[in-house]
Image 1: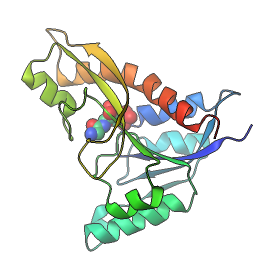
Image 2: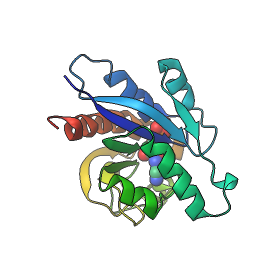
Image 3: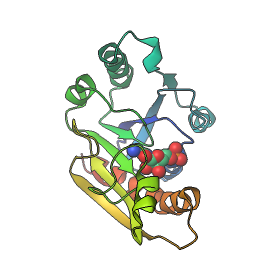
Length: 190
Ligand code: GAR
């Protein structure tokens, strides 16, 4: 079976990346992670190193402006000819060049039930608002901040004693299999 090439972009610990890598070891898996790109020295790059997958760091501060960074990031991604690009805790807004280049084949995972609580602090904002149910969303990426079409969601109950960290941990536990499921679905039968 041909496995479709997927490039994963991260900024953090990479637990979602690790779940994608684990699932890709299954014999019937429909995708292969061919590269991991980060915007900083993210701890999650270790998962790629351990799996022998090429990595690259494309820092915004290394470029004179956002457009130049966007071009460099796009070149780094396209070098691996992905069929799908997955933002798995990538904490920067991607630019128009990358969006055009991958033409709709780019998804993001977000730790809240969109369209509520978009942006960089989804867990904190949901908790501050006092919601009783939160969760995660896997969406298509468009030019807005977490405004793309929703592909899948999972709910998580907020507990009285929750902190941002404890709620985020429980969200990640449902987010990882949800993301794997969407990536498998999008790469199946192509
Ligand atoms: C994930 O929960 C993801 O939804 C979130 O960052 C975390 C990364 O965790 N992304 C955003 O908040 C994007 N707005 P990980 O590095 O352990 O996969």
